[in-house]
Length: 112
Length: 114
View 1 (cartoon, each protein chain N blue to C red):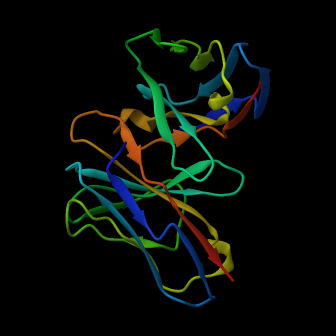
View 2 (view 1 turned 90 degrees about the vertical axis):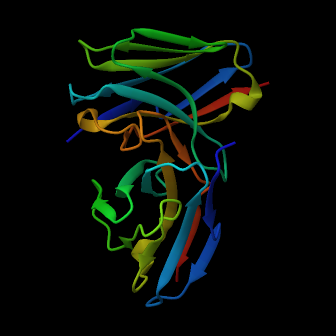
């Protein structure tokens, strides 16, 4: 079982609200990632980080932002949620050498 | 960028039969090809992976084959069981970058009937 945790698991929030999705890992991994998974199932990389103070945008454009102040923590923030942000957000991490990526359980976000 | 195509989108088999899922990729620099299983309400879990210097890898009932020349790789599950029912994703690390910076296929819903 991977030691990567996401909170909350489910979130229903009104349009215009600011939200932060939390992701933490206890494996000491340098690399962390955020993927967005729509109901059509495919996962798309939206953000990644190769270490503290390092963040990059992924292949899919996203209005969310991320920060990496601590190795174990990689939160994702939406400043003003919209219904188009409704999706599942999955956090993952991988080790410094080429090792597999472990995924969290995901946060299912619904913006009404 | 990398593009990964996965087929079929749904697959229904009887318990004990074999299941095969196929993927193609476009970036010849990709060198890592994992397969993830995702059960309802859970995050994807790695079930097997293969690196570009290997043509085939097996782990009990699961095997993966890779054809670098043709840019395709396949997942083979033998003696399927109802607990194998889930969504399966193939992926590739675009540009040969880190093993977590992945481009995923569209997913295959596998149903194993008892």
